[in-house]
Amino acid sequence: MTKVSLWRLYALFFKMGLFTFGGGYAMLPILQSEAVSKEKWVSQEELLNYYSIGQCTPGIIAVNAASFIGYKLRGVLGLICATLGVISPSVVIITLVALLLRQYMDNQYVQWAFSGIRVSVIALIISTVLDMWQKGVRGLFGYVVFALATIFLFWLKWSAIAIVVLAALSGLCSLLWQKRKQK
Amino acid sequence: MIYALLAWEFFKIGLFAIGGGLVTVPFLFDLAQKYPWFSTQELTDMIAVSQSVPGAVGINMATYAGFTTAGFAGGLVAVLSEVLPSMIVIYTIARLLNRWHENKYVSAILGGIRPAVLALILYAGWSITAQTITNWQTLGLLAILVLAMRLYKISPIYYIVLSAVIGVVLHLV
Image 1 (cartoon, each protein chain N blue to C red):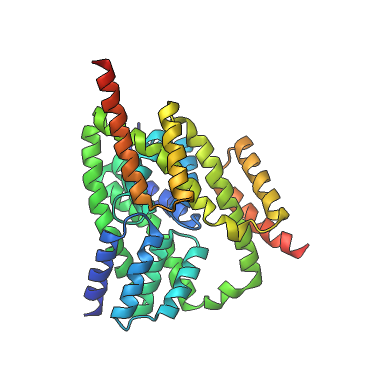
Image 2: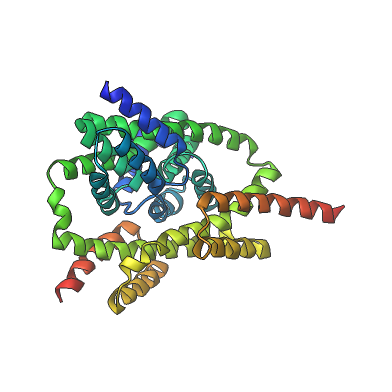
């Protein structure tokens, strides 16, 4: 694989920061399309791993995922460039909004546009989960973990960290269980 | 020195806010009470704006809070300080992962987390559904969009721009 230039890393993550509406998870569909399908920088499985780890380590998930991919491609410099790329659009846009566009948020057309954008964010999330289903959920064990995580989240309102930690433990237990059976 | 104080406070937020952008909100409320930088009312506006302009919510809020406190340089200091801890942590983990990803315990743990993360991702979508899918039109749009995304694998950016236009048109007709 040819080396990705630091500038390209920065530019691509700038683009992602620019088109992420609503937070780190909303960035996943764009990462999936640009970094996995188009550029083939990382596999779908790696991307899911990054999100899994990014969820339970300090900081913003979008930054964590960007850092992982940047590091994988170009080491520490790549990590820095990818992270700066994700945060640059925010710095520019927020500064503009805070400076002169405060009232633009009340603009009717802007709000209507955002009502449409939010629908596409939900659609993108559904579509991405369908894409990742094959890599993410394997066998009966995967179905059970997904079903339990869904119940704990949607109905019991558990925190994301508690769910990730429990899922990690269940992964470990399944391995130990298989080992015992083999003996 | 306001910048040093901003850097320190946002470094702490970056270090302790685990689980994404909105988790930083309670920390920012603490800041509003501890310092005369911004009021809780201003903070509420910041959250609303941060969620409705491009960019990760946590990044947007750090920039906004820093900007309100000490201008452009303040915004820059706040956002860079907030991402610094995660850069260090991810650097450490990425190095370990390079060495350990063949390890069967590590892959068993990740194999357990992956299905759970898919549930978390769906939940993130669900959390904005109530305020977004408010009538038959938006429900229909959602169904059409998902179908189109399954059939035509173009960049999500086109779908986002297209939906912004549709959002305006739906309100005009």
